[in-house]
Image 1 (cartoon, one colour):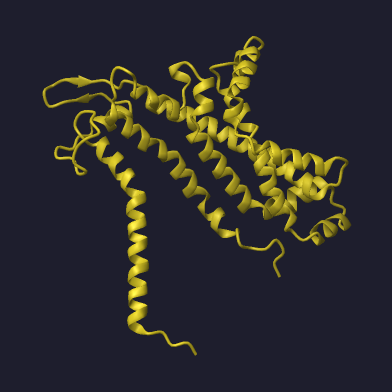
Image 2 (cartoon, rainbow, N blue to C red; image 1 turned 180 degrees about the vertical axis):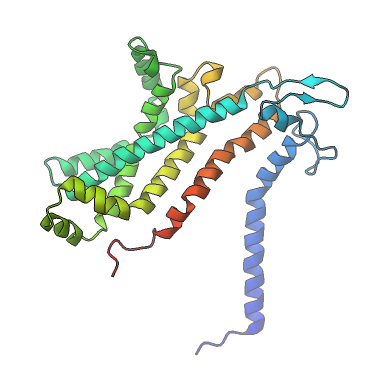
Length: 296
């Protein structure tokens, strides 16, 4: 039997807790600074961490409401933050569902259906996903600029073009879900086949319910990635009413004036959709990630 020295154990716990608290402080400090800036008077980055005269001016403007200062001056919202947030959420939801559908069906085909060229295609997907989308920004702009001559719905300054680009990110998620499908016992396929189920019925009735945890993970990852994306959206979106929150927030920091307080409030507000989606999907993320496919 191993006997731990109580005094040594106490110091080990103290050091471990101190390290954890210090790590959390380092992580949270920038976020606390942003919150502090959003409640300060004016648009300044320099000041006390706890504002001396806190104000809700920046938050009023972020929510699209007029703000009346103490001297009677009425400040109107400079930009449509809520519209930008809606654009971000709409694009992220459509792209996340689209990527989820395509990657799940493709992953099942690669995992369970044997066809010619399967290995080569899988290797190609693996190689393509190694190159970031930002390397193709010039090509993407040229492609969708030409597509705009055919239909404005998929041209420059359209949400359709942006969604199509985000849908191209299925390669990595095909590999992720395929790995999960590979871990499912093949006896389920054989049992379903004996019962007369087609491959589509096997996929829909057996694999989809078992794959709920990994599908939730993929959905959340795609949603967060799209919400936070700036490079691609900044190239394809031009007009103010079409911008996402990540792109539109950059307008607060123009060459003539830096509206740091308004920018801080909008930046914090951008985390709200991610938090809501994560809380909704949390039970799926936790419930089955460590569960096996075949339960006794």
